[in-house]
Amino acid sequence: AQSVTQLGSHVSVSEGALVLLRCNYSSSVPPYLFWYVQYPNQGLQLLLKYTSAATLVKGINGFEAEFKKSETSFHLTKPSAHMSDAAEYFCAVTDGGATNKLIFGTGTLLAVQP
Amino acid sequence: GAGVSQTPSNKVTEKGKYVELRCDPISGHTALYWYRQSLGQGPEFLIYFQGTGAADDSGLPNDRFFAVRPEGSVSTLKIQRTERGDSAVYLCASSSRGGEETQYFGPGTRLLVL
Image 1 (cartoon, each protein chain N blue to C red):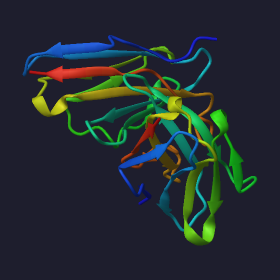
Image 2: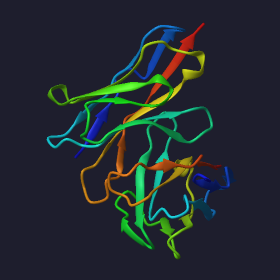
Image 3: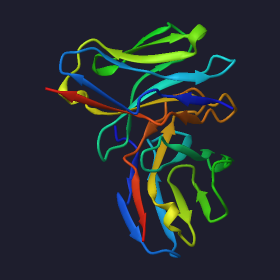
Image 4: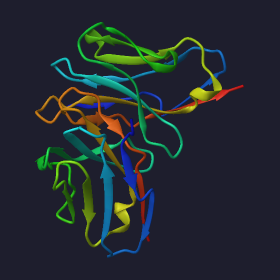
């Protein structure tokens, strides 16, 4: 069964610093991969998704992620953090079955310090 | 256009009571998913509809949980004899066809069972 591991439940960066949120998946078959962001008391908003096209995926708000099959990773980065980036970030993978339901990681809470 | 909407936004009930949670998907989306998000966790899949039929209900925790989508649009998640452990945020998502198509999430219903 598919699983997703997000290393670091809490990440704190300074405003203007690089953001790196880690995600590893378990799969022998390249899956579809997603990053979602969740602001307090709101639903999940799609940041970006990988569907076997380009390995470097650009998303909204300056975020991007690189699919590395050899490392089974899909880490999320942003060159310069803004205060408005403070939120919880979830990596997700499709389960590979007919449903393609999403399997989520446990999330990483990003804090941005002034 | 309008996104996925869910009602109520908050629901407080007593142990043993029956609750219904409603989801209005994006117009024209044939695929609809329910997820449950417990505190500090990522969302977990409950059930998937393609049109009117439940194509995958493997995530429903037990027979107290049931969901319907009688006309292929609005869906209702029903929980009988609620337990304190049912307290969570219930998220609904829809996509145009299912499969690898992006799932768009609603704001969720926060259920508290006292």
